[in-house]
Image (cartoon, rainbow, N blue to C red):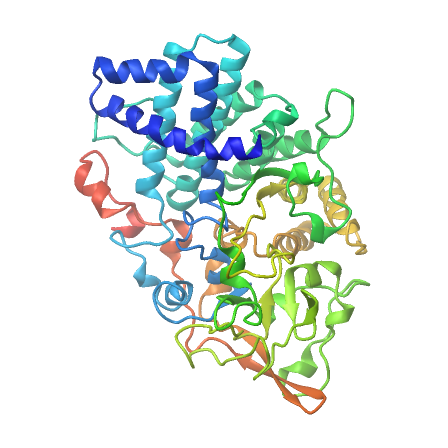
Length: 548
């Protein structure tokens, strides 16, 4: 069933082409094709399968969020890219030269593709309501799925632009005005409420991976944080956490082991909520090939590595942060990696870490290697920070050159929902609920917790999100919605540890991994520009004020 689910994307493409023509030139032939698609439950199911790729496209394994599988975490102090040329070094170029983001060019933009996807969803909703002859309950289910996908696409637009064009039906009009920010969030919320009401709590094994009520609730808890609708975020998160199946058991549970929280639900991971499964031979992705240490993939891989700032965000296993002052100058003392909490080892590969039956050699001249940032245009498989990514890599893939990656992309997991609950509750001054949610997340990795209130509580929420969700594509957007991007990303340089081997010992030197100061602008914190092409073709809108 799993292979069938994804291979039907090819059929989706065929039907989709017909659907596109139906929108542009509604002839009887195309109407017949649309009728053919939606009269039959089987054909409609095949058509719906194609929309599930949207979950992967905007994730860290896709190319819809930053292009070429680049991670937005590379725009923050979590991750440093080794390249300094366009493409593999675009995160660095954007960090140094924010003026590169313009109405004419923006690798972080999604406008054109997003509206093409909105159009497809709207055509699908029209066809479903006009031609479907299968049971009303199934029709309701299909509509819930489509409304979720529309909300998912509009979220990508709203978190970038805040004021967008809202389309709830196919239209041939090119001159459409922008809605207000509040209207945009209202639109998404309405679609999600419809999805929550229409989708089942669980599905039979043959439909595993399809959208459910819990997926929609989890996503709503995220969306409402961006909209600053704290009550609604809190309610959606709590309902998702408390959701039970028809036997009275919780649908979702935190995985007892953090490092195992990135498998799919079908693989026994009840923490996974919204995800996309990859299978060989297709669809696959290149995450391993792009990010494994160079010792796994000679001369390649290691596009980016965690920064020293990110490493120092992790607490000791006993609680509290270690004193890193000894490593601010060159020393032969081994950093306290073995004393850090479990999430560190599950997320970051460091010198001497166990990996695929060997030890990581993140030192100058090692199997994985170190190179100074700027000494080459690409990583050559080496780290520029002294660290490599571990999270989301497949340790069982021992030949990344031959084997493309098939590990699932987990877009939302239960730990995030707990953190969404904690943040919303903290904003509502409900310290008890916020502390309870934070305790649940920290208890999984045996970290102690003392209750907090006020600013200390909010700082704790932000710290926990940064660590728990590290390298999952959230932190850059969190900084923007917290209005902290200017504080954290402007007029700064980030760091790493340069490691050299001397006989049987190592020396560690604190190094700057940016060859110039990073910059950020107020207008980037507010929004991204509307593309020039849209402004040229749509007389009903003007550029956002901060981009005029």
